[in-house]
View 1: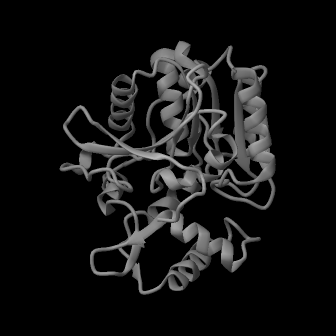
View 2: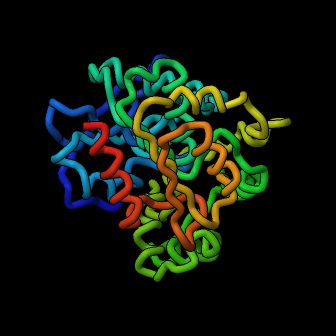
View 3: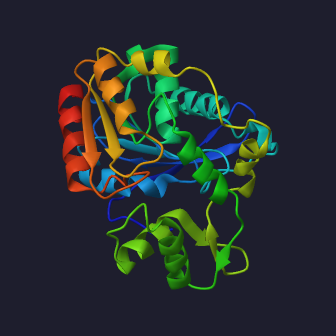
Length: 290
């Protein structure tokens, strides 16, 4: 995977069912709550390199990789690839690392986990950033995710991988140059055992989507979202997103007075958090959390 100029330590923790899970730990002062960066469904710690570049050193930045992603061990049973298991895994990390208070930054699935963490105990959340996710997930976006997640594809070179991403996700990042597609490819893919390049996750994470009614409904997430009341919250939306609608973002702002909403132009699901306006907005939230 592509590296970052910021230095971090590779650390590991153990899930409740015995998996060895990986996280990046970027150093920061003890006097502030760390930034807990929770990635999307098929993503890994590399997604938060822009956040680490901007804030590590001033803040401790912790980037866990969920089971079946990146350097974390793959689950023995695909049925454990679900948000409640991921939540239990993160709770185990917080307990092992002795973290009692944190800033949660969650992209997509990571934002769902952020809301679930708040529902369980919001007092430990110093601030929260929800990246292109809310209590309502648009059916069109879920349908699109089903078309690509778990598709076993591999490529002989990074350029082939970048071109494949451009072909499949060009409508999500319409302004990307080939160098930006290459950068994205190196965040979401890695070398396989046979020297080819493939997506850096267990293809079995798609199995829950393939079950009757899989991932299509779920519990009412509004109470979990509203558990974030009383703390600094930023919601980021891609203007072209098919996961978080403009209408849902408006309702979120109405239900959580004081929440800041930011829309990133010419971007779908999800903003990559290297957009200058996104980083500036995160800095604003952190200024309230310090």
